[in-house]
Every structure is written in C-alpha cells, then in structure tokens.
Image 1: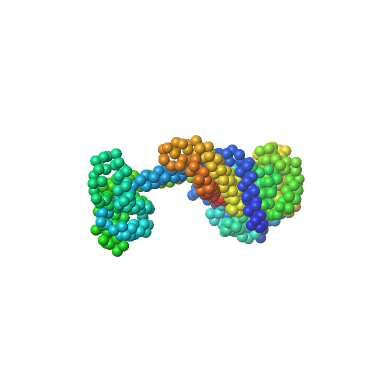
Image 2: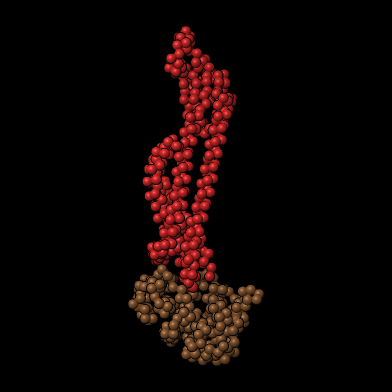
Length: 309
Length: 238
C-alpha cells in the first residue's frame, strides 16, 4: 500500500468518524470552542491593556533645559546623539524663541507677566528638549548619558541648566513598577488559563477515546499498525480544532462589536471590534494553530495509552 | 493421537512449548503447557472459565509474553517479534470473539474492508472481496447496516466474515457461541467447519459441551491452567 493511499484512508476514516460520532464530536467541539474563546479573550484583553499602558507611558517624558547662552549648534548635536540611541523614542526640540512664544501664549491673561516680559531686553528662557524613552525604565540611562563624559556630549554639563528627571523619578519609578506588575500578572494569568484549558480539552478528548478503547485493541489484533489505528483519531482531533477555531472567530464578531464602545472607553484603545478587524489574520492563525495543536496532540497522547497490546 | 504424541511434535504450524503464564505469585493462568497445532486442523480448546483458554490465545497473538517457555508460530517465538513483525503475524490470524468486537461506527462493509485495508489490500480487491465474503456468511443484504442494527447471530457471522476475508492461516474463535441461541450457534459452527474444510486452521475456545461433542475433532482440555487431555476425536469431558 502506497503512503498516499494509506494517508488517504486514514484521513477518510478520520472524517467519517468525526461525522458519525455526533455526540462525542459535539462535546469535544463545545469544550474546545470554550477553551479557544477564553484564550482569544485573553489575547484581546492583553493587547488592549498593552495599548492602554503604552498610552500612559507615552505621556511620561524628561525635560532637558539648556542655559540661555547655550549655542544652538551644540544643542542640535546633543539632539542628534540622543536620537541615535536605541532607547530613545523621540526628542522634541523647543528653541529659545519657541519657548518664549509658548510662555507668552500660556500667560497672556496675566498682565503682570506680559508687562514683565516686555520690560526685559533679552529672552530669559533657554531652549529645552522633551525626551521620550522607549520604555519608562530607560530614563535613568538616558539621563546618565547626558551627564556623562561621552565624546559626543562632552561639555554638555556646561550648557545644560537642569534635567527634571529627579523631580519625576518617583512618579516614573512607580509607573514602571505598576506596568511591570500588570505585564507579569497578565502573562501569568494567560499561562494559567492556557494550561487549565489545555487540560480540560485533553481530558475531554481522552474520555472520547476511552469509549473507543476496545475498538482500538481490536484494530491492533486485526493487524493494524499503530499509525493506522492512531491516524483517524488524530485527524478527528484536528477536525475538532479547525471547527472550534472557526466557531470561536464567528463568536468573536458579534461579541467584539457589542463590547466595542465599552472597551474603547475603559482601555482608551481603539476598541475590541477594531482590534478584531485589524488583527483578524493574526487571530485566525493563532486560534487555528492552537485548536489544531490541542486537538491533534491530545488525541495522539490519548490513543497512545491504549496502543499497548 | 495421545497427549504425548502431540506434545513432542513441534513441526506444526503452532507449537506451545512448555508454556507458563504467571500473573502474580499465586495467580497461575497457564502452567507447563505443551502441544502442537498442525496446518488445517480443527482444534477445540475446552475447559471451565479460568482454565487458561483465553490466556493461551493471548499468548499466541503476542498480546502477552509467557513467563516461561515459548509459543512458536512457524518455529518463531511470537513474544520476541517486534511491533512490525507482530502486526504481520496478526494479519495471518483471524479473530472471532464472544462479544463480537465489531467497529461500532462502521457498517458491515466497512468492518470487513478495514481488515483488508490494514493488510494493505487495494480498493478494487476490497470492492470485489467484501460482498463475496458477506455472501459466504449469508449477510449480503446487511452490507450497509451498522452493528447496532444486527442481531447477535448476524454480528457473529459478520465477525467471522471479517476474520476470514484475508484468507488467514489460522482462525481463532474465542467462545464464539457464548452469546448465541442454539440455532445461531449451529450456524456459526457450520461456517467454522466450512472454513476449516477449505484448509484454514481453526482454534475454537469454548466451554459449550454440545458444540464440542458434535464436532468430533481434536479436543485439548485445560484445567487450572494445565493441559489434562489431548484427544484426536474427543468430546467434552470435565
């Protein structure tokens, strides 16, 4: 018998069994769908939580204030040096003129300040940077770099008047801790749920195969090779996975649409429906691969137990 | 032939050579059993429940290994066969069970086709042979029925059809009439006799005295795991 013919028979037997064992098939698909739905929901929540945290993180920055005498060319050199760092997300340069203009517009209602500025002959404000790091944990390294003797920023201490990192440090550290804790916690929750879900699926499929243990032994006594006995069960498990993944995606459509407004307000993200639409391909692949792996591997392991005669 | 003559002939198809199977220290299933089964023989293995009949059959199918001694199939100890060789051995032996053990989600046709598929037979052969063998056991009209739709007698006839479709060297029938009424019992025995007359060795394990007595063939009697009688044209004496 050729490999192709053998594979064809195994696949056909798997499909037939999937179709004929209606009750077992329905039970396995139900459990697997619930499992994939839980896992998919965790992916949704994790992703939206990440977006929220990124938004909060992006609101944190460190300001670097230069002296009024600092030459613009040196300031721009430091800007380039900062931008070249991999831990720096963005550097916004506010020139002396821009700083004064901003200050005027912010205080235009305060006559005393407006009058004081007009009496001054020189611009009293220095240029400054708003530096945003890729990660809140990187601010300390960036500030150390600016205060170091690195050649590209050599002498920067002379023209930098102040870096407001120390004032913000406590808030940044606290935020970093919160973000790290949430990341770790959500990761652990995902792992725990994934393990529980996988165990439930495995046990469901194991029970389904337990019902066929006598037939498995008969097949072996008839001279069927292990692959020939196991194959249809694995195909059946894979079919459970495929159908469950498709059902889960179908379920996510109305549910993500229904929760779109709530998630948009709660997480400050684009909302669950937009996430579903924008990441459909990724979700499809993740759910399909997880479903097929859970169904196929569970069947493979479960049948192995009865293939000992 | 007497017990001694059978015991010392190991040129046959199957030879049980001083075989013992001990599960626990005080649970002896088979003890020092020696006898030979020749090609095309019809042999009844008789004894009360727990006498060791099923254990001997399991040893022959390499489902279990003997604690001591050897079960030889064409001079090869079956318990030494690796997985692939064991599979090949089983394809040469057709099995019929008391509880039929049909594949419940396959039709009568598919049950028999499965036995042919595992032996590597082609689709055209399967399409030709399955109806033929179903006809042989009088089940052609039930070809597309599932086992749940068949009576006990029909199930057993289907099980026999499945066992013989690959033209095995040996058919083992383990209490095949245990769940059948007298009419179906007679039918099943007639089919087994017919298979034997075509040259297939048949090993019938039973404790049905009536069946053994009408066969008038060789009878091997077991008691408490030991072979106590081996008669050429024997009857059920226990």
